[in-house]
Length: 263
Ligand code: PEP
Image 1 (cartoon, rainbow, N blue to C red):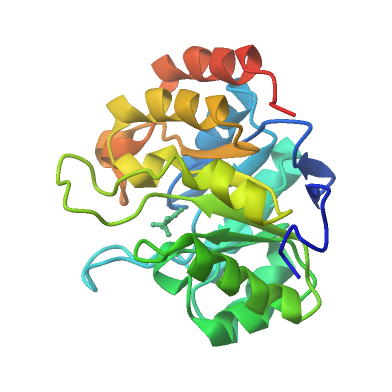
Image 2 (image 1 turned 45 degrees about the horizontal axis):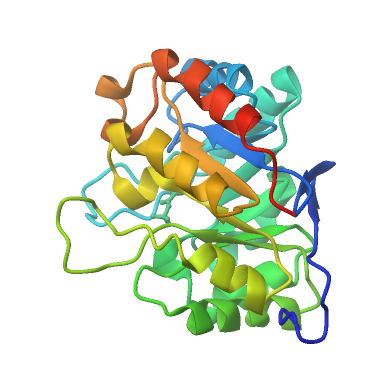
């Protein structure tokens, strides 16, 4: 269902009216985690300033350590809905448990499946059944074939509104959190008709790499990028070191403007 063999034209997925697909480069930005109403609104204003048309933000956070901040849950979803009402930006947010899919879908414009759940087949089937677009991160240990098969689980439930997101894979390299597999973008676009975006924030895990990796993503033809921003990253409860700050926004906006989409 997701293969390009039976569907030669590349697809566009619409999220609350915002297109992600071959004719555009969609900028998704926002906080890694929803922490407070003020922090989320400030991050959404930063996203807008950079030209983002979709707001990201996690209310359910799949953390490596069980002692780390796990997200605000439904209270976080309510904050996101309030910020959407204030800014008009449709919401992309992660769901980590199949039991929460309907609840998260009742707030979200797009459901995100993260790298740690990328082969959680019960979750993939649940998000495929709920009638919302899905952003499927690549598993950090998944081959491109396994990533596309994970997308197939969603599609098989009748939902073809899937956006693939390359977010780095685990390699022997320790200088970055994960290694951004930039070649996965054109490879996945040749194998699948689904849009492919890149997360330069979670792949590198370092603020100084986000803008260079964004440039590389757009240069190889990614259909969008998803980027962490935070008004006060030194106080962030999650992944502060990778969040862009106010001073980075003009450059981010210029990158998105200067690279017309590859057709
Ligand atoms: C995220 O985008 O909030 C996230 C946790 O990403 P990943 O699943 O790619 O680590």
